[in-house]
Length: 419
Image (cartoon, rainbow, N blue to C red; front, side, top):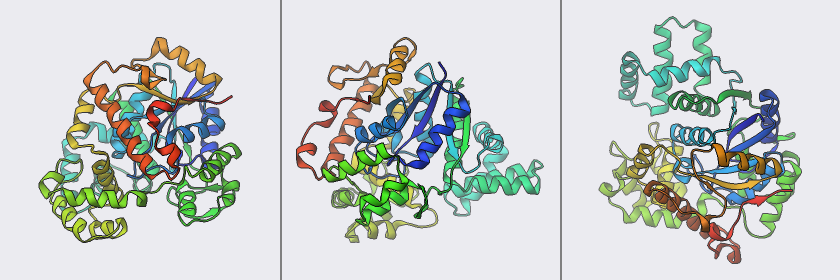
């Protein structure tokens, strides 16, 4: 058994994901695959287009053998914490041999170089980083500039400098670096691979040919365009699940569905109380408070807040933390308790069943298949589970199918078995 691990959002599963899955299996020579997938809220601080059980079913119907959920506190967090939670979860299964992630770089050499620098973080590098931050750059931009400046001082050639500069500007490369950092930090035996992303960029809005980004697909649906136009950019099983969900009023869900709740929550807060949320510092709390009082929708709110220092992604994540009541203290507490506390199964096939059987002997964490029967063994596990349940209960407010959304989904939905 050679097991491939994947770290995913599948929002929704499209042809690019299928390409990555097939290439990853081939590169690793894998016989089985397991995907760690975000639940109902994402790393960019947005709700998912479709609920987590349907997205997991898409993945298994298209060839993934087992899908487990990345706990909400990591799924809706910074790239560093998202990567740490995902890698730690894969490592805790005790059977994953390889992890393969898509990148714009398509090779590991320079990604590993940057990852090791960030893990070791020599004092000279930290001083360069502090200077870049003093210049007013966002943390990602300041860190990127510091990486290039430090490596250049160590003899980086012009060609290498250009290569690394390009690498650290691309979102999937940045995530790849974080995955490698997490592997180094927990001393994992999992072997990393990276696959060059095919055609569509991460944020591309174009739908040309058979490859489109998930962003383009979501934008297409947000503009109320016909779902039939997505047939060419999604595998048939995934398209069928999405189209049926839309027909049944289970999707799509967007951030705008929560805008009144979010604005109400922000207006309820004070500048002081806002500082309890992760990434709210350096006076941002005052600006959030002021902008919430004069904004009538999320677009106005984010436009009021967004600057070179405060990126849209950071602001959206803060908003989701406020919506889901995830504080800075919560995140620090979970990290101090070794990260993910359980392995939550969302969907599987026959090979996935084999993995689950094997995991009963190898996993360092308890496996949840039926939530009503699960009894958390620690306070950290209980709090993490409470956060996941709360996230789903809030998410279902935006699902237009009242018969579905009125249910306690975390307790009535079971892992999807795909024949």
